[in-house]
Amino acid sequence: KLNPKTDKERSTILNHAFYRLLKTRAQFYLLGPNIEGISPGFIDHFEATFICTDYNTVVSETHKISSYNKKGKKEKLINLCASLTEPTLIYCSSPARANHVVGLLEQSKINTETPQLFDAANWIADNFHSGWRLVHGLRRGIALHHGKIPRSLAHYMVKAFNEGSIRFLVCTSTLIEGVNTKAKNVIIYDNKIATKKFDFFTFNNIKGRSGRMFQHFIGNVYIFDEPPQEELPLVDVPFYTQGDDTDDSLLIQMDEEDLADESRERLAPFLHQDNLDLSIIKANSGIPPEAQIALSKELLIGLDYYSSHLCWSGLPKYEDLKVCCELIWKYFVKSNRRIAGVSSGEQLAYKINQLRWNPDIGALIEMEHEENPDKAVENVLDFVRRWGNYQFPRHLMALHRIQKYVFAREGIKPGDFSHFATNIENMFLDPAIMALEEYGVPIQLGKKLQNILQPNGDLDKALGVLKGLDLEDFDFSAFEKDLLSDARESI
Image (cartoon, rainbow, N blue to C red; front, side, top):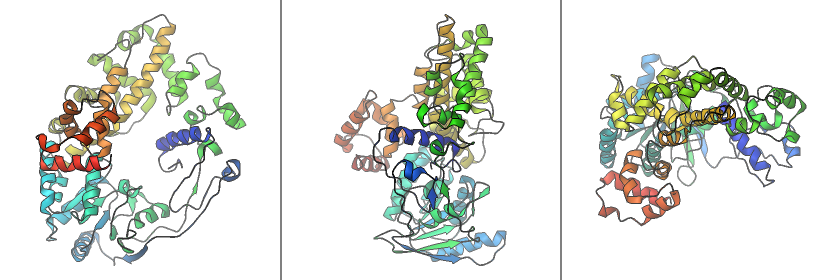
């Protein structure tokens, strides 16, 4: 994941984190599957050792599904699944494709009904949408796992799959990246991630999910398409190689003695300017320096207009929020395409305002103008996760730091966006309650716990009180008690 070819934004943040860790001179250990090597010179520079091994704890047997047409592929999948009685992962290229496959299995005569999943299905129906494909699938022992599903539910799906309650777990690449399962079989139904064909590295990662040490020493992999050409990657570590495609936002975080001559030249325009202090640029980690400087210039040129819309504190008026979102989109997002349901600054403001006045997932789904329940649910979940919980608060705080610097220098009292950013990021819940999502506690259940735990932002306190609760003293459903019991076991 340090390699920018996988996900450039995430790569930049991870490289920054790794660089900071290396500056402490601590020992480090990196683990990655199916890698041929790392950046030349990295080993000697950091006195490291690279060990490449093809050792596997289980054996994977690959089975090629014979020729088929488009209609025949569905029939082949259904017939294959009907013949499998052990835990099976089905890889699909996208959430839409995963929904499609769940529908195929649900409509087939494959009997995988699991009564213990009914409570989960009913709870999800009540708190999200009764027409969601996941609800109908769970009632048949078929589950979904992809990036738009809340982490708590995704955690539950994997647990139920590993316990044997779920026989078929239909997934995308998000399950392939580091989640351990007890799958005996893996069906690679698609040979793409979204619309792009996956490479041999990704194919091996998906294939490697079959079998589990001490569970299934021989795993089966069923493929519908020819595997990619055998070619394992050389992992680039951008903060070390500092190539032409290394982000300026990463280079500017590095100490001068660690920069190559070419990198110093690239950074010179940002270091020798008086529009924005270097400390502000660095504080806005991951955001291109040139975008930050350009934004500061616009604020200065339109000082009267922007000071009238950006010098707010607490909660913004809608027009002020709209100005913020338009600046964010123009300078930080800079995209002509639709991202998690948003295609402009104006639309971002509208959706953030919806979230502000009604931070309830079920209510937001009901407000979504979409006939297809799957799309309605996933549109809202995608927006909340990508924009509400991450991108908007991050970008709003970047704008906050820039306007604070520009206005203060001009003798104008700046705004303070921190309260609003924190509230949006945490769905107007206590941050410690929101953090329980990582322990498998859904936001809806977290709301019920807030007055019970009263953590006041202290996650350790929340976990301590949760661990000591007698769940029978509270009006939780059977499914909610299962989730809380699982969360307490992981504390």
